[in-house]
Image 1 (cartoon, helix red, strand yellow):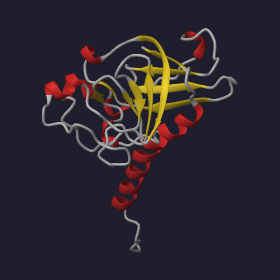
Image 2 (cartoon, rainbow, N blue to C red):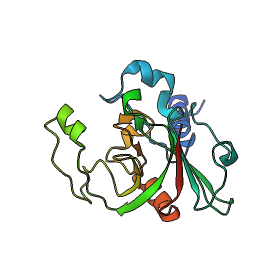
Image 3 (spheres, rainbow, N blue to C red):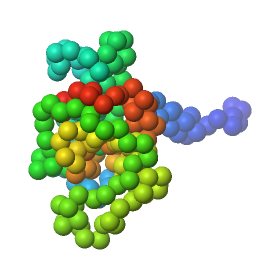
Length: 199
């Protein structure tokens, strides 16, 4: 038997690494559970791969004028359909931490913000007085990431994120956070008046 540089252990390690990165493009997997979600709830949608669900726009909207966004709190994803009915995109997202922070129903995009400044809500500062008063756009620690789309509900947004480990987790105070590359793509397609439904 000849000595091969590719041992059985090396082949298994390579195969495991390949499988871990191919399941869903754009899904960044956290190696450990962060502080904002307990293990019990995280185990129900492990890494948000098996829980990812596709949707049909007609099940949620009556038309696609100005496009449509569906924020799915259960499968932890944001879906977008363009007015032309040809473009459908879906992205893994962070979702509200608890039912207390979750608002469901119909709303719309009222403002698009490039490199948004983040200002904690009064309730956030009440719960955690150590939060900064504001974080300017472009700061890598900005929880709103590189783009934000304000909804007609005060303090609710679809926006980028400062920590990709939050994606696929219950990690927000009501918003839906996308990896910055994803929110930048979505931002270019969405317009003020795009309808949004949260389920």
